[in-house]
Length: 240
Image (cartoon, rainbow, N blue to C red):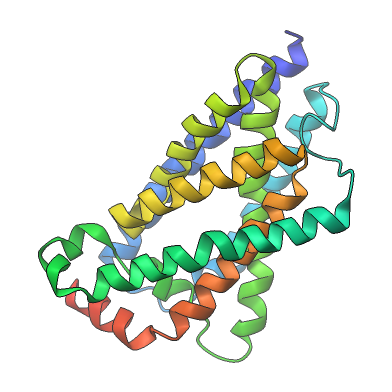
């Protein structure tokens, strides 16, 4: 492989390790203290995501791989957007139903502490009208960063040396583990979602459908979670 590709591979894996560490530390912080501001929309967090997006783009460019392999092209943008929206609804609505059942079912009460932790969701929920604009805006950078890393670089870029579907499965598991602060249900649900997003990326050969799907998943999740705010707050308060 070319030196550029090796730089891309090493940089992508290094960035993955950094995100895993940062998520772990953030999860510990959210469990230890009540943060009085929305972490997702904080300026330092936004700037950090933009910087990491620039790193991902730089790694893709230095790799020397054709843009199509990284999913940076689209044969039919309109179709990719429609497919992405449909996939986002298909992924998130069942996951929301399962999560709602898990946090409300008496049969699962003894395992609830391990299944789901609402503190991450509560922290990113909009707290006023202004945040109903800033939270969806902040999701753009978060989604672009995760899709560039997990789908474009780690699946598309590394598919030069390993089967794409094998990479999709392996990094979907890592994608789920990165979301461990949400509990075991969050890990499993996110891993499944990550695999479906990777499958969409492979099937369409474009990053656009999983980008749209991922964004739709996050927005739908926030809208539906806001309708359960009192339940989530009760559950979160019980964990303090």
